[in-house]
Image (cartoon, rainbow, N blue to C red; front, side, top):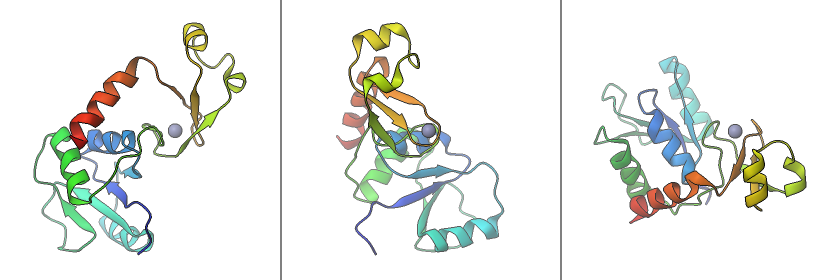
Length: 150
Ligand SMILES: [Zn+2]
């Protein structure tokens, strides 16, 4: 196994967990509709780990059944069980692709004027183009990370 961070597939019931994991920088693909056979095949092919609350899956090393329904507790559980060190602000919370730093000049007209005037560091999702900056949500996310990694 490589030293890369584990990559997850998150069961359709657990959308908030998927988002939380992305905020912490983990590859967490969220699956709404799936064929069970296809899913189990993908886990093997891509060496992903399924996070689920369902006890109906077969017992396998790449299927992890979470203990709680609370998304914050689930996030803490995943960080603990998989021994992860967060790399926050590296992944798009919306689509799960990496975000990369971009020059301020590149995002002219793509963020609100107030944001452009008051912020200097911007990152952009390589897939959906969503732009991230350390604005209003930033402090909330930092608090969230503190809480999760305690
Ligand atoms: Zn994106």
